[in-house]
Amino acid sequence: MNRRLFGRAVAVAIGVILIGVIIVAVIPGIGPTGEYDRETVEIIDSQTDEQLERVSVRVADTPQKRYQGLSNTDSLATDEGMLFIHDNEDRYVYVMRNMSFPIDIIFIDMTGTITRIHHAEMPTSTTDDSLQRYPGHGKYVLEVSYNYTQEHNITVDDRVQINIQWDHIRYN
Image (cartoon, rainbow, N blue to C red; front, side, top):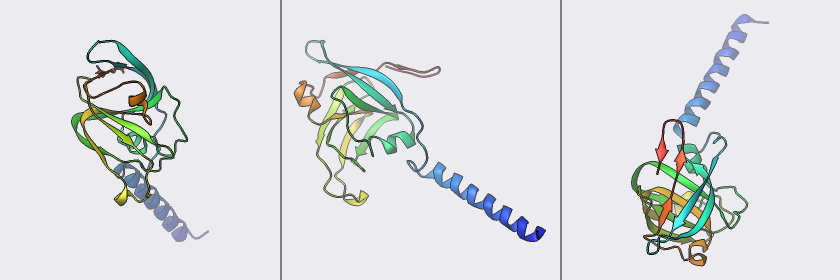
């Protein structure tokens, strides 16, 4: 085999691999998300301090997992959801990219107080530029099945008790 040709082929292969690694690192959601941790959150009535519901959630705590979210998920059980954890409390905008069912989108501040609830219908368009945007303020976003909040009398100012513990981080 021609050594010069072999050397060029190896150089091209290394270049393609490096470009792939850079693309996965720079563009959230393009790489593998890995397994989601599962936890349970409790929703507490702000007036009575009584538990309204418990929701089993998949935890989206990395940029890749937050970007993927519930995209390409077939359905949610009635007591199931996804909890998005952001690094900081801020204003965020959510869209329903590649969704096959409607959801409720619940924004939660760092104290666990619900700040906004959206009832997100199925998108009529599939292009990112024309997707309905659902803005809110918080550190966490909880997505549950459509009208879950209405069916369980969950409102703005109710609280979500989030007790997720890792070796070096504790969210409360």
